Image 1 (tube, one colour):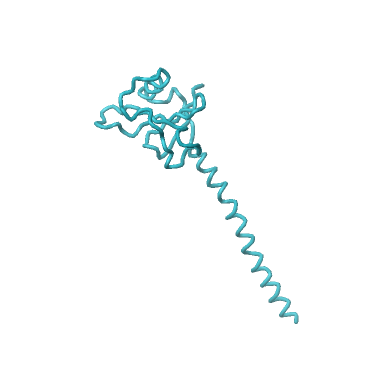
Image 2: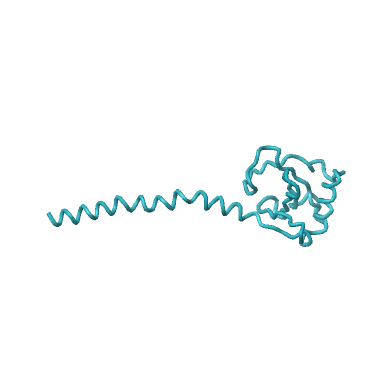
Length: 133
């Protein structure tokens, strides 16, 4: 009977172990979300390339913009930016000197005041523009 008690204890431990490992998996979603939010860093306005300053000035004045795609709805398909309804974000080209195309640089605007994100790598990462530095 003592051996059976030991087997029962081991069985009980094995039954409890999966529950213990399941708890971190359940909390994995918030960690993933936190990582996504951390992927959106900040960048000082003064650290932006001059072409981004020009794009932000054009946005503030309502244009005219150099590309017909400027001002279109940004879909956030990469899901790097915080999730919002369609139409919340709009994208604008940041001219890349020497590029024969629009290049990879963009300003993405949100609907809140001073909610401007800069990407230099065509939506792989974003930096919220900090206008205070």
